[in-house]
Length: 453
Image (cartoon, rainbow, N blue to C red):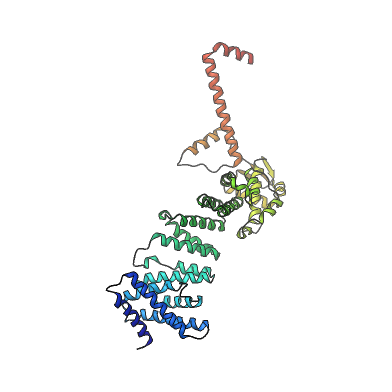
């Protein structure tokens, strides 16, 4: 009898001897005992180095795989045995080395990955175990790719949504560690389709945090700041360190966001939080919220607190991300102080040249983050606001209609709109009071009006 036939015989004997009386748990226990005993015998038979012992154990395990996949083995027996063998590769009691685990799982995967109709569940388990080995090796991207290749539709039984979601979460974490933003975002889309059916709060917290991280790396800072703020709101109340980290990340993203009404809203939301005062970038947050000019020295001193990926330069390589955000903020502040300004003077105030100053203004106007018009011949920008009562009333009316939202308004316009609305209300109230006075006290009203003449 060959060695392969002997191993197959031992496996078959285990099932035949227990099939009539043993429960499934007892059968699995018997499989584990058989594997461990075989490995212990191999270790004792080898008196050489640890490397030689690992090689001997690997040969035994490969023999078990070959025996299970041989034509003489019943498929149900093979599936149950391999289903117990795969998780045992990560068992501390077995003490297999990384290289041994990796080679065994690669060997098994090569043998069964084309036989999905029979070994679909085993393929899923093998890929998960293989990913754990790659994580131990710090091969983040390889581990993420291993998990991403899992096809849950290959399983012969319905896979719980929570299990799928957990795999997607782990895949996102690994792709982010590997700085593969594209694949992380792709996996996020898969996870998003399941998140509404997930009741596990810890998994949902990890999802919200990873979603914010991906938005942060994608330089979608408004969405990222909101994501970190939501993660802060749902974080464990007793974990002060985690909450402080989330709030810090939210503030950094809010500071880096493009100037405009959306940024004002997130700045206001974060500024109102009592914990924000102790955060690293609170000085910038406060100045931006209070619409104060920020100096180059403050930019330089605050840049040290940013994450590595946030200290990059802009796509046109004209400035860092923080410098660009601060320049836009300063333009926003100056637009509320000046009716018009020459780009030469604006450039001096922003600490940049005329071309960059004009480019910043043009982009903000084009993206409806600021209202104004540029006179390139005169080298001048004129800032505009909605000042007429009719325009204010129209904006208020549109805002009340759910089907048609008005475009975002610049801060100066918002302030002006509120004042104009108050003036209209005051005038209306005065007119009503005068009409009432004439109606109820006509003699007194006549005397009052005469004295005014």
